[in-house]
Amino acid sequence: MNREDLVEAITREVVSRLKNSESASPAAGGQSAAAAPSTMQLNRYVDHTLLKPESTSAQIDKLVAEAKEHNFRAVCVNGTWTERCARQLRGTDVDVAVVVGFPLGAMASRIKAAEARHAVEEGADEIDMVINIGALKSRDLDLVRRDILSVTRVTGTQRVTKVIIEAALLTDEEKVLACQIAEDAGADFVKTSTGFAKGGATVHDVALMRNTVSPKIEVKAAGGIRSREDAIAMIEAGATRLGTSAGIAIVTGGRSTDAY
Amino acid sequence: MNREDLVEAITREVVSRLKNSESASPAAGGQSAAAAPSTMQLNRYVDHTLLKPESTSAQIDKLVAEAKEHNFRAVCVNGTWTERCARQLRGTDVDVAVVVGFPLGAMASRIKAAEARHAVEEGADEIDMVINIGALKSRDLDLVRRDILSVTRVTGTQRVTKVIIEAALLTDEEKVLACQIAEDAGADFVKTSTGFAKGGATVHDVALMRNTVSPKIEVKAAGGIRSREDAIAMIEAGATRLGTSAGIAIVTGGRSTDAY
Image (cartoon, rainbow over all chains, first blue to last red; front, side):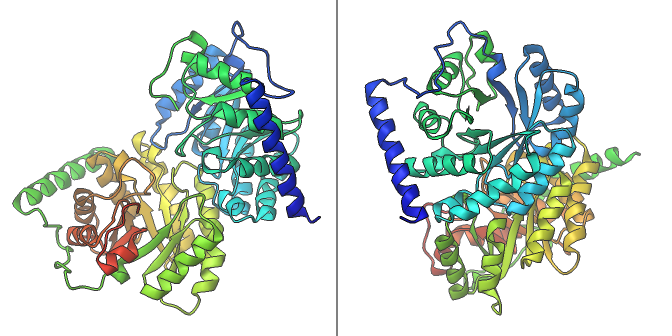
């Protein structure tokens, strides 16, 4: 059996097992699903996120101040703000997550590597990179792998790498493939979405991704998480990190209408 | 009068003149507006465009074949496809335009420069780069300028640089500022839109941009141009290049419903 056939067979098996597990229990996220965190402090799950291209320095400073106030896990920003955030967050428990190849994932691998390197040099603790979606759709799985490797070789074991698969654009089979390749290429997290595609995180996708990767890998849900209820649903499905602009609503129990 | 006051004064004057010219004649695009090209061949205006992140190699090959068949001016693609397009278009009149810092414009300037350099090395004839919109909104005009310069220093006089201002996110004053800075930093074109923001090219924006830059600079309209009628309206307003996925509909007189 050649590699592609093997991958296809494993993919079918994982998808089939997930479907069975979903029909047995809607919230069964597999071996790593968390207990319902209804009384849990959610702040350390939150990557406090501002990625809109028109965001100003004042809005970034506000994001950082809020992240400090609520002791969020990280801020998640575009590369142009890396140094500004790193400077303001030095000595705190809030990490700086910087996006790479974002949001299309369709730049050359070499440039994703350069972008990650530059972000790390400017103080990024975590890199949230987008896979080459077109290569996956073209079944150029070797390019998908090399593309992720180009970044994980830069981040190594000193920095966290989250691999965004942009689930809304993929079939279930492609989601499983993407997660397997990401783990194989050294990802620390698989992440559902950029927040810029037609859809964000779903419970189905988080559970599928959680079931696909090994316990060494975490799952970040991102896109469309607007309330404490949404956050808890994602955590119950297996997410250990939430990318959202509604972090304050989530920790205070409100609901943000324009969050992403 | 300091630089910022001067820029504000010029901006107000340009916007005011444009408003007068618009009320006098809806199609008056200023000194460079073209004659109505109702019988004109439009193919050489078209950058045949495919920028969706999920585009496959087969779809890119189809784009290239269509561009050859209709002798479009260029194809416009993401960086991962540069070498593939350049190879297939060698010896034709169809150029390869590659996007940089796309579509958010919020990566570090150094990475935009690296991305442009890599694209040129792989055969790009033209670079379509996105400005640092957040820096413009923060009135860090020096960063906006240096960011564009980081790319035009790479492209020099051998390659065409189009500077995307993402007009849908800007006020008229900001559009004028962005165009002035782009010309000052060596742009060959100012371009309205990425096609990924909430709005694309408008006749108003094309005319405003045409009135702002000198005759040495061209204007590319992009985003939402779906028919021959749309194309002609943009050209009448002053555009000499059209970024669209509806190139075939435009040259054959049809209308594309899902074009961008």
